[in-house]
Image (cartoon, rainbow, N blue to C red; front, side, top):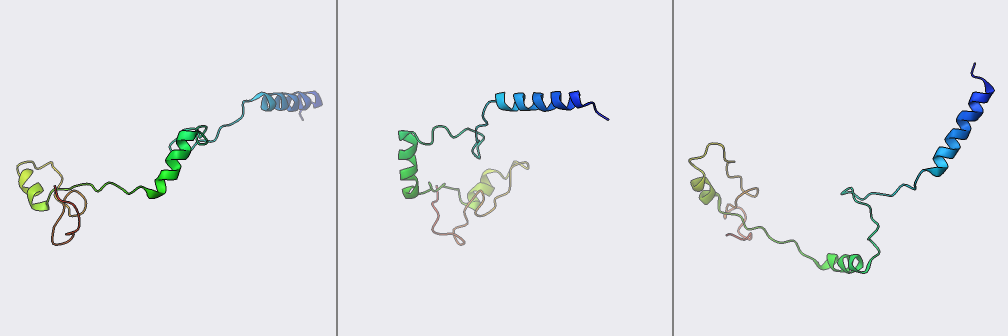
Length: 96
């Protein structure tokens, strides 16, 4: 059985330590605190984001990529839509 004195000391120590601890700050998904989200530049960024369009990444043609890396067995093989474009599959994507 734990002496009553020890229980009181433990409870007191817990209350003192928990009340003197700094306030926790929430982190966003990148691991940064969100303290700048209400600043003017952050509001301007948020207001333009719905209008933003992603930049289309230009890929080489699959035949060009295969010819370029034919001598290198360690280079990734051409995969249409991943690291190259096959024009008969996706003619609307930009070609470099």
